[in-house]
Length: 228
Ligand SMILES: Nc1ncnc2c1ncn2[C@H]1C[C@H](O)[C@@H](COP(=O)(O)OP(=O)(O)OP(=O)(O)O)O1
Ligand SMILES: Nc1nc2c(ncn2[C@@H]2O[C@H](COP(=O)(O)OP(=O)(O)O)[C@@H](O)[C@H]2O)c(=O)[nH]1
View: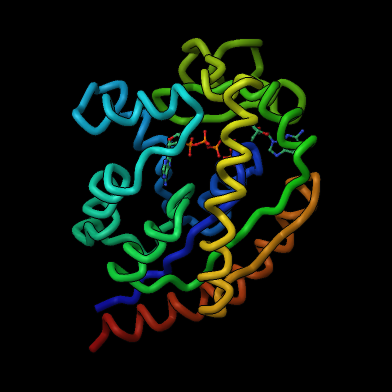
């Protein structure tokens, strides 16, 4: 059985998880799953979990662990699709989620983005997204070609309700409280890599270098395994 390379990318809202995951996907040909996109899909489809999740997100709170794990774990464990690599962007957010994920599979790397608060606030003020695809823009950093319009589909972009400054402060406070035990959990496992800076363009070369050392080895293992 081929070994899948599995990683999580953690960081507060606006830290660049989505932006960096896109770069990883593009540069290494890897697939990533975003828990936030998954939650938003469920809200749009008005599933039972989506309706429950919406009440928490509106208040700037995380979705409770039992709702999140029920939503995501079946997706994460689905090995029908022959992915070499999985990224769990935004999951786990709590120690209970990290423990549930740990029982489901082994992770190779946990990337932790450590970005100053003022930088986060400024980025999210200017964040616009294309909900159907999850494409993310920033009016300063990576603006769309036409203001308010998705480059690929020509559909309108929106600002997320939970990026409003009022919701954001509560989200950031909550993130700090829940993230520390998760960070400690991965540190103890020896797979935590923390990157601190105000610019994604300065963090990216370091993440790219780290992954270059990890991914070829695993893909070679996978090739060997599949020939036996
Ligand atoms: N692992 C999770 N546990 C609990 N709630 C979650 C989780 N992932 C997503 N959510 C909920 C709370 C989030 O505010 C909402 C949107 O997800 P997501 O886009 O990842 O969050 P966010 O808007 O805080 O992310 P970002 O960090 O990209 O700003 O869905
Ligand atoms: N100014 C600036 N904006 C950035 C940088 N990196 C990402 N962004 C933007 O900041 C916002 C948050 O990034 P995103 O990847 O969505 O972060 P996430 O919330 O952790 O997934 C988006 O609008 C990005 O386009 C950066 O280095 N500088």
